[in-house]
Image (cartoon, rainbow over all chains, first blue to last red; front, side):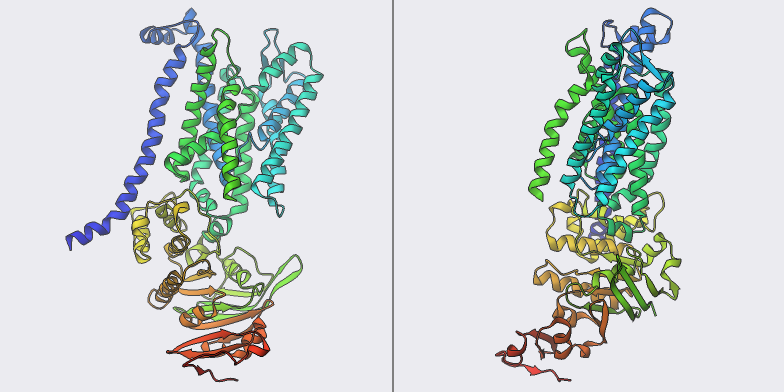
Length: 357
Length: 270
Protein backbone atom coordinates (compact mmCIF):
# COMPACT_ATOMS: atom_id res chain seq x y z
CA UNK A 1 0.00 0.00 0.00
CA UNK A 2 2.83 2.37 0.96
CA UNK A 3 4.65 1.41 -2.18
CA UNK A 4 1.50 2.00 -4.16
CA UNK A 5 1.14 5.59 -2.94
CA UNK A 6 4.84 6.22 -3.56
CA UNK A 7 4.40 5.08 -7.12
CA UNK A 8 1.23 7.14 -7.40
CA UNK A 9 3.07 10.29 -6.42
CA UNK A 10 5.93 9.69 -8.77
CA UNK A 11 4.74 11.06 -12.11
CA UNK A 12 3.84 14.59 -11.04
CA UNK A 13 6.90 14.66 -8.80
CA UNK A 14 9.16 13.48 -11.62
CA UNK A 15 7.62 16.13 -13.82
CA UNK A 16 8.33 18.79 -11.21
CA UNK A 17 11.96 17.67 -11.04
CA UNK A 18 12.07 17.73 -14.81
CA UNK A 19 10.75 21.28 -15.03
CA UNK A 20 13.12 22.41 -12.33
CA UNK A 21 16.04 21.44 -14.59
CA UNK A 22 14.54 23.75 -17.22
CA UNK A 23 14.45 26.54 -14.67
CA UNK A 24 17.99 25.69 -13.63
CA UNK A 25 19.12 26.15 -17.22
CA UNK A 26 17.67 29.67 -17.25
CA UNK A 27 19.35 30.37 -13.92
CA UNK A 28 22.67 29.14 -15.31
CA UNK A 29 22.38 31.50 -18.27
CA UNK A 30 21.57 34.37 -15.95
CA UNK A 31 24.58 33.53 -13.83
CA UNK A 32 26.89 33.35 -16.87
CA UNK A 33 25.87 36.87 -17.84
CA UNK A 34 27.75 38.24 -14.82
CA UNK A 35 31.30 37.11 -15.68
CA UNK A 36 30.63 37.73 -19.37
CA UNK A 37 29.58 41.32 -18.65
CA UNK A 38 32.55 41.92 -16.34
CA UNK A 39 34.94 40.56 -18.92
CA UNK A 40 33.35 42.66 -21.67
CA UNK A 41 33.63 45.72 -19.44
CA UNK A 42 37.34 45.10 -19.11
CA UNK A 43 38.17 44.39 -22.75
CA UNK A 44 39.53 47.36 -24.66
CA UNK A 45 42.42 49.72 -24.80
CA UNK A 46 42.31 50.22 -21.03
CA UNK A 47 43.00 46.97 -19.20
CA UNK A 48 41.92 47.21 -15.59
CA UNK A 49 41.92 45.06 -12.50
CA UNK A 50 38.58 44.27 -10.87
CA UNK A 51 39.26 46.78 -8.10
CA UNK A 52 40.20 49.55 -10.53
CA UNK A 53 37.08 48.73 -12.50
CA UNK A 54 34.86 49.27 -9.49
CA UNK A 55 36.68 52.45 -8.62
CA UNK A 56 36.42 53.80 -12.15
CA UNK A 57 32.71 53.00 -12.24
CA UNK A 58 32.27 54.91 -9.01
CA UNK A 59 33.91 57.96 -10.56
CA UNK A 60 32.15 58.66 -13.82
CA UNK A 61 34.01 61.93 -14.21
CA UNK A 62 37.46 60.34 -14.30
CA UNK A 63 39.15 59.48 -17.57
CA UNK A 64 38.60 55.75 -17.22
CA UNK A 65 35.16 56.27 -15.72
CA UNK A 66 34.23 58.26 -18.78
CA UNK A 67 35.34 55.43 -21.06
CA UNK A 68 33.34 52.93 -19.05
CA UNK A 69 30.18 54.99 -18.69
CA UNK A 70 30.12 56.53 -22.16
CA UNK A 71 31.48 53.73 -24.32
CA UNK A 72 31.77 50.30 -22.78
CA UNK A 73 28.73 50.18 -20.52
CA UNK A 74 26.21 51.38 -23.14
CA UNK A 75 27.70 48.86 -25.53
CA UNK A 76 27.24 46.03 -23.05
CA UNK A 77 23.72 47.11 -22.19
CA UNK A 78 22.95 47.32 -25.92
CA UNK A 79 24.27 43.77 -26.44
CA UNK A 80 22.22 42.43 -23.57
CA UNK A 81 19.06 44.30 -24.56
CA UNK A 82 19.19 43.51 -28.26
CA UNK A 83 19.99 39.86 -27.60
CA UNK A 84 17.15 39.62 -25.09
CA UNK A 85 14.82 41.21 -27.64
CA UNK A 86 15.78 39.14 -30.68
CA UNK A 87 15.81 35.71 -29.01
CA UNK A 88 12.16 35.75 -27.89
CA UNK A 89 11.09 37.51 -31.11
CA UNK A 90 12.44 34.54 -33.05
CA UNK A 91 10.86 32.03 -30.65
CA UNK A 92 7.46 33.70 -30.94
CA UNK A 93 7.58 33.82 -34.74
CA UNK A 94 8.66 30.19 -34.97
CA UNK A 95 5.71 29.26 -32.79
CA UNK A 96 3.09 31.45 -34.44
CA UNK A 97 4.04 30.52 -38.00
CA UNK A 98 4.85 26.95 -36.90
CA UNK A 99 7.96 27.23 -39.01
CA UNK A 100 11.40 26.29 -37.65
CA UNK A 101 13.12 28.67 -40.06
CA UNK A 102 11.03 31.69 -39.14
CA UNK A 103 12.62 34.68 -37.44
CA UNK A 104 12.56 38.43 -38.01
CA UNK A 105 15.88 38.16 -39.84
CA UNK A 106 15.05 35.24 -42.14
CA UNK A 107 11.58 36.57 -42.96
CA UNK A 108 12.91 39.92 -44.13
CA UNK A 109 11.24 41.80 -41.28
CA UNK A 110 14.57 43.12 -40.01
CA UNK A 111 15.34 44.37 -43.50
CA UNK A 112 11.97 46.08 -43.67
CA UNK A 113 12.78 47.85 -40.42
CA UNK A 114 16.21 48.76 -41.76
CA UNK A 115 14.68 50.26 -44.87
CA UNK A 116 12.19 52.26 -42.84
CA UNK A 117 14.88 53.55 -40.50
CA UNK A 118 17.23 54.47 -43.35
CA UNK A 119 14.40 56.28 -45.08
CA UNK A 120 13.76 58.20 -41.88
CA UNK A 121 17.36 59.24 -41.42
CA UNK A 122 17.91 60.17 -45.06
CA UNK A 123 14.66 61.92 -45.84
CA UNK A 124 13.24 63.44 -42.71
CA UNK A 125 15.05 66.65 -42.06
CA UNK A 126 16.26 66.74 -38.51
CA UNK A 127 15.55 63.09 -37.78
CA UNK A 128 19.20 62.18 -37.98
CA UNK A 129 22.31 62.24 -40.07
CA UNK A 130 25.96 61.34 -40.06
CA UNK A 131 28.68 63.00 -38.05
CA UNK A 132 32.10 63.63 -39.45
CA UNK A 133 33.29 60.74 -37.30
CA UNK A 134 31.22 58.42 -39.48
CA UNK A 135 28.66 57.68 -36.76
CA UNK A 136 25.02 57.82 -37.57
CA UNK A 137 23.21 59.87 -35.01
CA UNK A 138 19.54 60.10 -34.43
CA UNK A 139 18.01 63.43 -33.45
CA UNK A 140 14.53 62.15 -33.31
CA UNK A 141 14.61 58.52 -32.23
CA UNK A 142 10.82 58.35 -32.06
CA UNK A 143 10.37 59.21 -35.73
CA UNK A 144 13.08 56.76 -36.76
CA UNK A 145 11.62 53.97 -34.63
CA UNK A 146 8.19 54.66 -35.99
CA UNK A 147 9.43 54.43 -39.56
CA UNK A 148 11.43 51.29 -38.80
CA UNK A 149 8.27 49.78 -37.35
CA UNK A 150 6.30 50.79 -40.44
CA UNK A 151 8.89 49.07 -42.61
CA UNK A 152 8.75 45.91 -40.55
CA UNK A 153 4.94 46.06 -40.62
CA UNK A 154 4.97 45.88 -44.40
CA UNK A 155 7.15 42.80 -44.08
CA UNK A 156 5.15 41.04 -41.39
CA UNK A 157 1.75 41.73 -42.95
CA UNK A 158 2.96 40.37 -46.29
CA UNK A 159 4.21 37.23 -44.55
CA UNK A 160 0.95 36.78 -42.64
CA UNK A 161 -1.09 37.23 -45.82
CA UNK A 162 1.06 34.66 -47.61
CA UNK A 163 0.90 32.23 -44.70
CA UNK A 164 -2.88 32.48 -44.77
CA UNK A 165 -3.10 31.89 -48.51
CA UNK A 166 -3.74 28.26 -49.29
CA UNK A 167 -1.04 25.87 -50.38
CA UNK A 168 1.98 27.88 -49.26
CA UNK A 169 4.17 25.58 -47.17
CA UNK A 170 6.84 26.52 -44.62
CA UNK A 171 9.62 26.42 -47.21
CA UNK A 172 7.68 28.67 -49.57
CA UNK A 173 7.14 31.17 -46.78
CA UNK A 174 10.87 31.29 -46.15
CA UNK A 175 11.51 31.86 -49.85
CA UNK A 176 9.02 34.70 -49.75
CA UNK A 177 11.00 36.07 -46.81
CA UNK A 178 14.20 35.87 -48.85
CA UNK A 179 12.51 37.77 -51.67
CA UNK A 180 11.30 40.41 -49.23
CA UNK A 181 14.68 40.92 -47.64
CA UNK A 182 16.17 41.35 -51.15
CA UNK A 183 13.50 43.87 -51.95
CA UNK A 184 14.06 45.87 -48.78
CA UNK A 185 17.82 45.65 -49.18
CA UNK A 186 17.44 47.03 -52.69
CA UNK A 187 15.37 49.87 -51.27
CA UNK A 188 18.02 50.58 -48.64
CA UNK A 189 20.72 50.51 -51.30
CA UNK A 190 18.74 53.00 -53.32
CA UNK A 191 18.70 55.36 -50.36
CA UNK A 192 22.43 54.84 -49.92
CA UNK A 193 22.96 55.57 -53.59
CA UNK A 194 21.59 59.03 -53.12
CA UNK A 195 23.27 59.59 -49.78
CA UNK A 196 26.31 61.78 -49.29
CA UNK A 197 29.70 60.14 -48.86
CA UNK A 198 29.74 60.56 -45.14
CA UNK A 199 26.25 59.18 -44.72
CA UNK A 200 26.98 56.33 -47.10
CA UNK A 201 29.97 55.08 -45.14
CA UNK A 202 28.07 54.96 -41.91
CA UNK A 203 24.96 53.46 -43.47
CA UNK A 204 26.94 50.62 -44.97
CA UNK A 205 28.57 50.04 -41.62
CA UNK A 206 25.13 50.10 -40.06
CA UNK A 207 23.87 47.27 -42.25
CA UNK A 208 26.44 45.00 -40.56
CA UNK A 209 25.03 45.78 -37.16
CA UNK A 210 26.88 47.94 -34.66
CA UNK A 211 26.25 47.65 -30.95
CA UNK A 212 28.44 50.66 -30.15
CA UNK A 213 26.02 53.18 -31.59
CA UNK A 214 23.16 53.63 -29.11
CA UNK A 215 23.47 56.22 -26.38
CA UNK A 216 21.73 55.95 -23.01
CA UNK A 217 18.60 57.78 -24.14
CA UNK A 218 18.15 55.31 -27.00
CA UNK A 219 18.82 52.36 -24.75
CA UNK A 220 16.09 53.66 -22.49
CA UNK A 221 13.67 53.78 -25.40
CA UNK A 222 14.65 50.26 -26.42
CA UNK A 223 14.03 49.01 -22.92
CA UNK A 224 10.72 50.82 -22.69
CA UNK A 225 9.50 48.97 -25.78
CA UNK A 226 11.17 45.64 -25.07
CA UNK A 227 10.06 45.08 -21.49
CA UNK A 228 6.28 45.30 -22.03
CA UNK A 229 6.54 43.22 -25.20
CA UNK A 230 8.57 40.49 -23.49
CA UNK A 231 6.15 40.57 -20.57
CA UNK A 232 3.27 40.08 -23.01
CA UNK A 233 5.06 37.12 -24.64
CA UNK A 234 5.63 35.51 -21.26
CA UNK A 235 2.02 36.15 -20.27
CA UNK A 236 0.93 34.26 -23.40
CA UNK A 237 3.28 31.31 -22.84
CA UNK A 238 0.50 28.74 -22.40
CA UNK A 239 -1.35 30.03 -25.43
CA UNK A 240 1.84 29.63 -27.43
CA UNK A 241 2.22 26.09 -26.13
CA UNK A 242 -1.30 25.40 -27.33
CA UNK A 243 -0.66 26.94 -30.76
CA UNK A 244 2.43 24.73 -31.15
CA UNK A 245 0.05 21.78 -30.94
CA UNK A 246 -1.94 22.98 -33.95
CA UNK A 247 -4.50 25.71 -34.57
CA UNK A 248 -7.50 23.47 -34.10
CA UNK A 249 -6.24 22.00 -30.87
CA UNK A 250 -5.46 25.50 -29.62
CA UNK A 251 -8.94 26.71 -30.50
CA UNK A 252 -10.49 23.73 -28.76
CA UNK A 253 -8.53 24.78 -25.67
CA UNK A 254 -10.12 28.22 -25.76
CA UNK A 255 -7.22 30.09 -27.38
CA UNK A 256 -8.14 32.95 -29.72
CA UNK A 257 -5.61 31.82 -32.28
CA UNK A 258 -6.06 34.46 -35.00
CA UNK A 259 -5.94 37.35 -32.57
CA UNK A 260 -2.94 35.97 -30.71
CA UNK A 261 -1.10 35.31 -33.95
CA UNK A 262 -1.64 38.81 -35.29
CA UNK A 263 -0.76 40.54 -32.02
CA UNK A 264 2.25 38.30 -31.36
CA UNK A 265 3.66 38.85 -34.85
CA UNK A 266 3.12 42.59 -34.60
CA UNK A 267 4.85 42.85 -31.24
CA UNK A 268 7.72 40.63 -32.37
CA UNK A 269 8.27 42.92 -35.33
CA UNK A 270 7.98 46.00 -33.12
CA UNK A 271 10.73 44.61 -30.90
CA UNK A 272 12.82 43.87 -33.98
CA UNK A 273 12.19 47.30 -35.46
CA UNK A 274 13.36 49.08 -32.32
CA UNK A 275 16.52 46.99 -32.19
CA UNK A 276 17.25 47.51 -35.89
CA UNK A 277 16.62 51.25 -35.71
CA UNK A 278 19.44 51.71 -33.20
CA UNK A 279 21.97 48.97 -33.88
CA UNK A 280 21.27 47.85 -37.45
CA UNK A 281 20.71 44.29 -38.56
CA UNK A 282 22.32 41.56 -36.51
CA UNK A 283 21.52 38.34 -38.29
CA UNK A 284 20.56 34.91 -37.01
CA UNK A 285 20.57 35.57 -33.24
CA UNK A 286 16.79 35.39 -33.41
CA UNK A 287 16.97 32.09 -35.29
CA UNK A 288 19.70 30.31 -33.33
CA UNK A 289 18.77 31.02 -29.73
CA UNK A 290 15.28 29.47 -29.64
CA UNK A 291 16.56 26.37 -31.43
CA UNK A 292 19.46 25.94 -29.07
CA UNK A 293 17.12 26.25 -26.08
CA UNK A 294 14.61 23.85 -27.62
CA UNK A 295 17.31 21.25 -28.14
CA UNK A 296 18.59 21.61 -24.60
CA UNK A 297 15.44 21.99 -22.49
CA UNK A 298 12.51 21.45 -24.86
CA UNK A 299 9.85 23.60 -26.45
CA UNK A 300 7.80 24.61 -23.39
CA UNK A 301 7.30 28.37 -23.81
CA UNK A 302 7.30 28.91 -20.06
CA UNK A 303 11.05 28.27 -20.21
CA UNK A 304 11.74 28.73 -23.90
CA UNK A 305 10.92 32.45 -23.87
CA UNK A 306 13.01 33.56 -20.88
CA UNK A 307 15.86 31.22 -21.79
CA UNK A 308 15.88 32.49 -25.39
CA UNK A 309 16.10 36.03 -24.04
CA UNK A 310 18.97 35.13 -21.71
CA UNK A 311 20.81 33.09 -24.32
CA UNK A 312 20.34 35.87 -26.87
CA UNK A 313 21.81 38.36 -24.43
CA UNK A 314 24.72 36.07 -23.62
CA UNK A 315 25.40 35.15 -27.24
CA UNK A 316 25.39 38.71 -28.44
CA UNK A 317 27.55 39.90 -25.57
CA UNK A 318 30.11 37.16 -26.14
CA UNK A 319 30.03 37.66 -29.91
CA UNK A 320 30.49 41.39 -29.55
CA UNK A 321 33.31 40.99 -27.06
CA UNK A 322 34.99 38.57 -29.45
CA UNK A 323 34.42 40.99 -32.34
CA UNK A 324 36.04 43.76 -30.31
CA UNK A 325 39.08 41.75 -29.24
CA UNK A 326 39.70 39.58 -32.34
CA UNK A 327 41.66 42.16 -34.32
CA UNK A 328 41.95 44.89 -31.69
CA UNK A 329 42.13 47.84 -31.83
CA UNK A 330 39.88 47.46 -34.89
CA UNK A 331 36.34 46.28 -34.19
CA UNK A 332 34.67 43.65 -36.35
CA UNK A 333 30.97 44.13 -36.99
CA UNK A 334 29.18 41.73 -34.65
CA UNK A 335 26.66 40.83 -37.36
CA UNK A 336 29.45 39.20 -39.35
CA UNK A 337 30.22 36.95 -36.42
CA UNK A 338 26.62 35.93 -35.74
CA UNK A 339 26.14 35.20 -39.43
CA UNK A 340 29.13 32.86 -39.36
CA UNK A 341 27.32 30.99 -36.61
CA UNK A 342 23.82 31.34 -37.99
CA UNK A 343 24.13 30.54 -41.68
CA UNK A 344 25.31 26.94 -41.16
CA UNK A 345 22.55 26.48 -38.57
CA UNK A 346 19.99 27.81 -41.05
CA UNK A 347 21.15 25.34 -43.71
CA UNK A 348 21.10 22.50 -41.20
CA UNK A 349 17.52 23.34 -40.20
CA UNK A 350 16.49 23.63 -43.84
CA UNK A 351 17.88 20.19 -44.66
CA UNK A 352 16.21 18.75 -41.58
CA UNK A 353 12.87 20.32 -42.46
CA UNK A 354 13.04 19.02 -46.02
CA UNK A 355 13.94 15.50 -44.98
CA UNK A 356 11.06 15.40 -42.54
CA UNK A 357 8.53 16.63 -45.09
CA UNK B 1 -30.14 16.53 -23.11
CA UNK B 2 -26.48 17.49 -23.25
CA UNK B 3 -26.30 18.63 -26.87
CA UNK B 4 -29.15 19.60 -29.14
CA UNK B 5 -28.41 20.43 -32.75
CA UNK B 6 -31.34 21.73 -34.75
CA UNK B 7 -31.15 22.47 -38.45
CA UNK B 8 -27.47 23.39 -38.35
CA UNK B 9 -25.94 24.49 -41.65
CA UNK B 10 -22.41 25.39 -42.67
CA UNK B 11 -21.09 26.75 -45.95
CA UNK B 12 -17.54 27.06 -47.13
CA UNK B 13 -17.29 29.91 -49.67
CA UNK B 14 -20.92 29.58 -50.75
CA UNK B 15 -20.63 25.78 -51.03
CA UNK B 16 -22.98 24.19 -48.54
CA UNK B 17 -21.07 21.59 -46.53
CA UNK B 18 -23.73 20.88 -43.91
CA UNK B 19 -27.47 21.26 -44.29
CA UNK B 20 -30.28 20.86 -41.81
CA UNK B 21 -28.26 18.75 -39.42
CA UNK B 22 -30.50 17.77 -36.53
CA UNK B 23 -29.62 15.38 -33.71
CA UNK B 24 -29.18 15.10 -29.99
CA UNK B 25 -26.57 13.71 -27.66
CA UNK B 26 -27.62 12.50 -24.23
CA UNK B 27 -25.38 12.42 -21.21
CA UNK B 28 -23.04 9.42 -20.92
CA UNK B 29 -23.47 8.01 -24.39
CA UNK B 30 -21.12 7.24 -27.25
CA UNK B 31 -22.47 8.43 -30.58
CA UNK B 32 -20.69 7.30 -33.74
CA UNK B 33 -20.78 9.38 -36.93
CA UNK B 34 -20.42 7.31 -40.09
CA UNK B 35 -20.28 8.36 -43.70
CA UNK B 36 -18.01 8.46 -46.74
CA UNK B 37 -15.21 10.97 -47.33
CA UNK B 38 -16.55 14.46 -47.77
CA UNK B 39 -19.84 13.68 -46.04
CA UNK B 40 -19.21 16.51 -43.58
CA UNK B 41 -18.26 14.51 -40.48
CA UNK B 42 -15.20 16.59 -39.58
CA UNK B 43 -16.99 19.83 -40.38
CA UNK B 44 -19.86 18.80 -38.13
CA UNK B 45 -17.48 18.22 -35.21
CA UNK B 46 -15.69 21.52 -35.78
CA UNK B 47 -19.00 23.38 -35.73
CA UNK B 48 -19.67 22.04 -32.24
CA UNK B 49 -16.69 23.57 -30.46
CA UNK B 50 -16.21 26.93 -32.08
CA UNK B 51 -13.46 26.02 -34.56
CA UNK B 52 -15.98 26.71 -37.31
CA UNK B 53 -19.03 28.90 -37.04
CA UNK B 54 -22.29 27.37 -38.31
CA UNK B 55 -24.06 29.58 -40.82
CA UNK B 56 -27.52 28.57 -39.68
CA UNK B 57 -29.58 26.56 -37.25
CA UNK B 58 -29.24 26.22 -33.52
CA UNK B 59 -26.71 24.42 -31.36
CA UNK B 60 -27.65 24.14 -27.72
CA UNK B 61 -25.18 22.88 -25.15
CA UNK B 62 -26.73 22.23 -21.77
CA UNK B 63 -29.75 24.17 -23.03
CA UNK B 64 -27.75 27.29 -23.87
CA UNK B 65 -26.74 28.42 -27.36
CA UNK B 66 -23.12 27.62 -28.19
CA UNK B 67 -22.34 31.24 -29.00
CA UNK B 68 -23.28 32.31 -25.48
CA UNK B 69 -20.18 30.54 -24.17
CA UNK B 70 -16.87 32.34 -24.46
CA UNK B 71 -13.98 30.32 -25.88
CA UNK B 72 -12.59 29.51 -22.44
CA UNK B 73 -15.91 28.42 -20.97
CA UNK B 74 -16.61 26.31 -24.03
CA UNK B 75 -13.19 24.68 -23.63
CA UNK B 76 -14.20 23.60 -20.13
CA UNK B 77 -17.25 21.80 -21.52
CA UNK B 78 -16.17 20.44 -24.89
CA UNK B 79 -12.94 18.56 -25.65
CA UNK B 80 -11.68 17.91 -29.14
CA UNK B 81 -9.34 15.27 -30.55
CA UNK B 82 -8.31 16.30 -34.05
CA UNK B 83 -7.55 13.92 -36.87
CA UNK B 84 -3.83 14.66 -36.93
CA UNK B 85 -1.75 15.83 -34.00
CA UNK B 86 1.34 17.94 -34.26
CA UNK B 87 4.26 16.00 -32.79
CA UNK B 88 6.53 18.63 -31.26
CA UNK B 89 9.20 19.16 -28.65
CA UNK B 90 6.80 19.06 -25.71
CA UNK B 91 6.87 16.23 -23.22
CA UNK B 92 3.83 14.00 -22.81
CA UNK B 93 3.13 15.51 -19.41
CA UNK B 94 3.33 19.05 -20.82
CA UNK B 95 0.89 18.09 -23.57
CA UNK B 96 -1.60 16.65 -21.12
CA UNK B 97 -1.17 19.54 -18.70
CA UNK B 98 -2.06 21.82 -21.60
CA UNK B 99 -5.53 20.33 -21.40
CA UNK B 100 -5.87 22.01 -17.99
CA UNK B 101 -5.33 25.42 -19.61
CA UNK B 102 -9.02 26.34 -19.74
CA UNK B 103 -9.13 25.78 -15.98
CA UNK B 104 -6.06 27.63 -14.76
CA UNK B 105 -5.31 31.30 -14.84
CA UNK B 106 -1.63 32.24 -14.60
CA UNK B 107 -0.28 28.69 -14.43
CA UNK B 108 -1.14 25.15 -13.39
CA UNK B 109 -1.74 24.48 -9.70
CA UNK B 110 -0.73 21.38 -7.79
CA UNK B 111 -4.28 20.16 -8.37
CA UNK B 112 -3.85 20.56 -12.12
CA UNK B 113 -0.65 18.50 -12.02
CA UNK B 114 -2.45 15.84 -10.03
CA UNK B 115 -5.33 15.75 -12.46
CA UNK B 116 -2.98 15.44 -15.41
CA UNK B 117 -1.29 12.54 -13.68
CA UNK B 118 -4.64 10.82 -13.06
CA UNK B 119 -5.50 11.08 -16.76
CA UNK B 120 -2.07 9.76 -17.74
CA UNK B 121 -2.60 6.72 -15.54
CA UNK B 122 -6.09 6.19 -16.86
CA UNK B 123 -4.70 5.85 -20.38
CA UNK B 124 -1.58 3.93 -19.32
CA UNK B 125 0.79 6.71 -20.31
CA UNK B 126 2.57 7.22 -16.99
CA UNK B 127 5.78 5.52 -18.12
CA UNK B 128 5.98 7.90 -21.09
CA UNK B 129 5.34 11.07 -19.07
CA UNK B 130 8.70 12.72 -19.74
CA UNK B 131 9.18 11.54 -23.31
CA UNK B 132 8.92 14.13 -26.06
CA UNK B 133 5.98 13.86 -28.44
CA UNK B 134 8.08 13.44 -31.57
CA UNK B 135 9.56 10.27 -30.11
CA UNK B 136 6.18 8.55 -29.74
CA UNK B 137 4.47 6.02 -31.97
CA UNK B 138 1.18 6.86 -33.69
CA UNK B 139 -0.87 4.95 -31.12
CA UNK B 140 0.89 6.60 -28.19
CA UNK B 141 0.45 10.05 -29.73
CA UNK B 142 -3.25 9.37 -30.21
CA UNK B 143 -3.57 8.41 -26.57
CA UNK B 144 -1.75 11.59 -25.53
CA UNK B 145 -4.17 13.66 -27.59
CA UNK B 146 -7.09 11.89 -25.95
CA UNK B 147 -5.51 12.44 -22.55
CA UNK B 148 -5.19 16.16 -23.23
CA UNK B 149 -8.84 16.38 -24.19
CA UNK B 150 -9.82 14.43 -21.06
CA UNK B 151 -7.71 16.73 -18.90
CA UNK B 152 -10.12 19.49 -19.93
CA UNK B 153 -12.73 17.61 -17.86
CA UNK B 154 -15.26 18.06 -20.64
CA UNK B 155 -18.88 17.00 -20.59
CA UNK B 156 -18.71 16.34 -24.32
CA UNK B 157 -15.78 14.89 -26.24
CA UNK B 158 -15.51 15.27 -30.01
CA UNK B 159 -13.20 12.84 -31.78
CA UNK B 160 -12.25 12.97 -35.43
CA UNK B 161 -11.05 9.56 -36.66
CA UNK B 162 -9.39 8.62 -33.38
CA UNK B 163 -8.46 5.16 -34.67
CA UNK B 164 -7.05 5.94 -38.10
CA UNK B 165 -3.37 4.98 -38.42
CA UNK B 166 -3.58 2.64 -35.44
CA UNK B 167 -2.99 -1.10 -35.29
CA UNK B 168 -5.99 -3.22 -34.30
CA UNK B 169 -4.92 -3.57 -30.69
CA UNK B 170 -4.65 0.20 -30.28
CA UNK B 171 -7.96 0.66 -32.10
CA UNK B 172 -9.74 -1.59 -29.63
CA UNK B 173 -7.94 0.01 -26.69
CA UNK B 174 -8.93 3.52 -27.69
CA UNK B 175 -12.55 2.65 -28.43
CA UNK B 176 -12.92 0.63 -25.23
CA UNK B 177 -11.43 3.54 -23.30
CA UNK B 178 -13.91 5.90 -24.93
CA UNK B 179 -16.86 3.67 -24.06
CA UNK B 180 -15.74 3.50 -20.44
CA UNK B 181 -15.23 7.23 -20.36
CA UNK B 182 -18.72 7.73 -21.73
CA UNK B 183 -20.56 5.20 -19.59
CA UNK B 184 -18.64 5.45 -16.34
CA UNK B 185 -17.07 8.88 -16.58
CA UNK B 186 -20.27 10.57 -17.75
CA UNK B 187 -18.51 12.23 -20.67
CA UNK B 188 -20.54 11.92 -23.85
CA UNK B 189 -18.45 11.08 -26.89
CA UNK B 190 -19.16 11.97 -30.49
CA UNK B 191 -16.83 9.92 -32.68
CA UNK B 192 -16.43 10.33 -36.43
CA UNK B 193 -14.96 7.21 -38.01
CA UNK B 194 -14.52 5.31 -41.26
CA UNK B 195 -14.40 2.00 -39.44
CA UNK B 196 -18.04 0.91 -39.47
CA UNK B 197 -17.44 -2.31 -37.58
CA UNK B 198 -15.41 -0.71 -34.84
CA UNK B 199 -18.13 1.92 -34.51
CA UNK B 200 -20.87 -0.71 -34.40
CA UNK B 201 -19.04 -2.57 -31.68
CA UNK B 202 -18.66 0.34 -29.29
CA UNK B 203 -21.28 2.90 -30.27
CA UNK B 204 -24.59 3.42 -28.47
CA UNK B 205 -26.16 5.35 -31.29
CA UNK B 206 -25.25 6.23 -34.86
CA UNK B 207 -25.48 9.18 -37.21
CA UNK B 208 -25.01 8.26 -40.85
CA UNK B 209 -24.08 11.19 -43.06
CA UNK B 210 -23.79 11.81 -46.75
CA UNK B 211 -23.40 15.04 -48.72
CA UNK B 212 -23.74 17.19 -45.64
CA UNK B 213 -27.02 15.63 -44.60
CA UNK B 214 -27.88 13.13 -41.91
CA UNK B 215 -29.34 10.16 -43.78
CA UNK B 216 -30.19 8.02 -40.83
CA UNK B 217 -29.81 7.94 -37.09
CA UNK B 218 -30.61 5.55 -34.31
CA UNK B 219 -29.22 2.44 -32.64
CA UNK B 220 -27.24 -0.33 -34.34
CA UNK B 221 -30.34 -1.54 -36.18
CA UNK B 222 -30.33 1.46 -38.51
CA UNK B 223 -27.18 0.02 -40.09
CA UNK B 224 -28.74 -2.06 -42.88
CA UNK B 225 -27.38 -3.24 -46.23
CA UNK B 226 -29.66 -0.80 -48.04
CA UNK B 227 -28.33 2.13 -46.06
CA UNK B 228 -24.71 1.11 -46.65
CA UNK B 229 -25.33 0.83 -50.37
CA UNK B 230 -27.17 4.13 -50.49
CA UNK B 231 -24.57 6.03 -48.52
CA UNK B 232 -21.29 4.38 -49.48
CA UNK B 233 -22.33 3.01 -52.89
CA UNK B 234 -21.18 -0.45 -51.87
CA UNK B 235 -23.23 -3.60 -51.58
CA UNK B 236 -22.78 -5.12 -48.13
CA UNK B 237 -23.85 -7.87 -45.86
CA UNK B 238 -24.85 -7.13 -42.31
CA UNK B 239 -24.16 -10.14 -40.18
CA UNK B 240 -23.84 -11.13 -36.59
CA UNK B 241 -20.82 -13.15 -35.56
CA UNK B 242 -20.56 -14.23 -31.94
CA UNK B 243 -22.94 -11.48 -30.99
CA UNK B 244 -21.02 -8.79 -32.86
CA UNK B 245 -22.88 -6.92 -35.53
CA UNK B 246 -20.66 -6.68 -38.61
CA UNK B 247 -20.88 -4.99 -41.96
CA UNK B 248 -19.12 -6.95 -44.67
CA UNK B 249 -18.61 -4.88 -47.79
CA UNK B 250 -18.80 -6.64 -51.15
CA UNK B 251 -18.30 -5.42 -54.67
CA UNK B 252 -21.45 -3.62 -55.68
CA UNK B 253 -24.21 -5.70 -57.29
CA UNK B 254 -22.55 -9.00 -58.26
CA UNK B 255 -20.73 -9.52 -54.99
CA UNK B 256 -23.82 -8.96 -52.93
CA UNK B 257 -24.71 -11.96 -50.84
CA UNK B 258 -22.17 -14.19 -52.48
CA UNK B 259 -19.36 -14.05 -49.96
CA UNK B 260 -18.34 -17.52 -48.81
CA UNK B 261 -18.87 -16.99 -45.13
CA UNK B 262 -19.01 -19.81 -42.69
CA UNK B 263 -21.12 -19.62 -39.52
CA UNK B 264 -22.92 -16.40 -40.26
CA UNK B 265 -26.48 -15.47 -39.44
CA UNK B 266 -27.62 -12.89 -41.92
CA UNK B 267 -29.04 -9.75 -40.49
CA UNK B 268 -32.70 -9.02 -41.16
CA UNK B 269 -33.06 -7.23 -44.44
CA UNK B 270 -35.44 -4.29 -44.50
